[in-house]
Amino acid sequence: MTSLSAVIPVAGLGTRSLPASKSVPKEMLPVFDRPIIQYIVEEAVTSGAKNIVLVTSRGKSIIEDHFDIAPDLEATLKRANKNDLYKLVHDLSRMTAVQTVRQKEALGLGHAVWMAKNLIQTSPFGVMLGDDLVEAKVPGLQQLLEKSKSLKKDVSEIGVVMLTEVPDSEVSKYGICELDPKEPGRILRCIEKPKPSDTKSRSAILGRYLLPRDIFEILEKQKPGNLGEIQLTDALNVLAEQGRLYGCYLQGLRFDAGDRLGFLRANLHYYLKSPLKSDVQNLLKEFMA
Ligand code: G1P
Image (cartoon, rainbow, N blue to C red; front, side, top):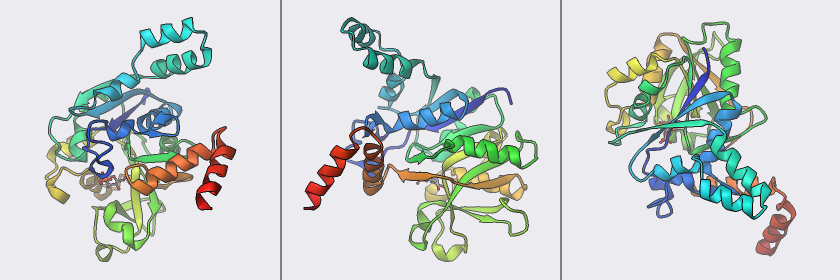
């Protein structure tokens, strides 16, 4: 592996966040002081990713703009001696190189990842989903890298996915992995959004993956699965069958920013971590009364 790349699919329609996401991409909705996508890109960068590929679709170009240089804004802030704001805007656009590729049709998450194939030269590479905000001492993607290295295998040949335990009521919202009772961490089977009665496992895939580059060849051959879409989980299942897929349980917090309550939880969490903490606590007390 030379340097790490990360693919961030942002082509989805964001139906769970409507009407807010009708003309503003859901990835641009703010959690505390920055759009959701910035948390994801920052996690990629702190995990060591040098090359970030956004898989976009129509109406999503403001996501790219967010990471681009804004000369007028920078000049204005500099002239006004607003140095903190200048630094914030300057550093954001220099944080990383962001490339984009368009997914013209919504053919599924697996298809979106496959679209990035020509821009990814490294193995393994990361895939990060925008709905899942991970707040942890060790950044989410880095946790996968550390797990991968600890397995004493050829890291360029194996996949590692981030897992968390979910209650029965949430099984059908996720890709679920069945783990090998004999080899800790090894995944035997992955099923996309099963019924709770279809599997005994409650280990759900969160939106962080570290994948070998040949996943693109596997995706290329993938037939439509759940909802008639090309599912990433089905390609992961091929890796599992080949004995090349491992799970890593998240050490930290995760927020489902695509869900109303998850979005509120994420906002409360980051507001309460900010200098506004005591003001927010007072506000909450006021509302409770
Ligand atoms: C996707 C994946 C699913 C995974 C989930 C994590 O589902 O298909 O396997 O568990 O992300 O958030 P989506 O949330 O796009 O329906």
